[in-house]
Image (cartoon, rainbow, N blue to C red):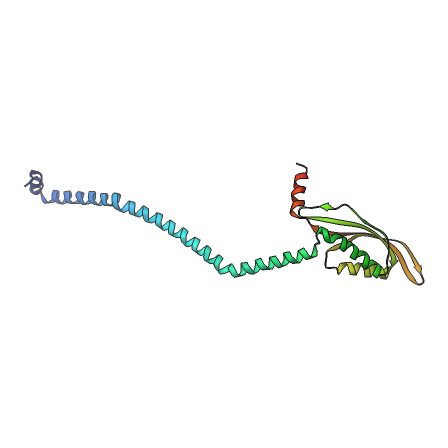
Length: 202
């Protein structure tokens, strides 16, 4: 038998118990340090990853559940864009639109004294197309003309309206009207690029 073991066996019972307790404590500490703590840390990391993955799954599930709604909103935006495109003419349609405006005025009984397109005012993705207009006729004809312009499928704003030379002719109130008719058109990609190139640097 090992002499060290014999020495331990010959010790009093209290000392044997104390040695056993100390050995158990050292063994428990070793198990905690080398086995439990690494596993505990690994468990924490895995829990954090699990929580992250669960969050991602929840988010993707929410998006998947909302996909029909998002598709409907996307289709609605496309319809609104298509509608906006029908209301803003392109450059080729501007002469036809301006002709339509003069036709509406003549059909309402107005005489055109001035119809002068002004230079376009370029904005971010569209351009203002202003036209100075002076017409003469009855109040009734002017009202009909403005109403007809408002009902055009294209957007045309009438601003800066001024009445002058108001007089009664054959029991009809006649007047001369000066106004600014402004329509709008989308810029094509080339125009937008050229405009960005020529824009002054700040």
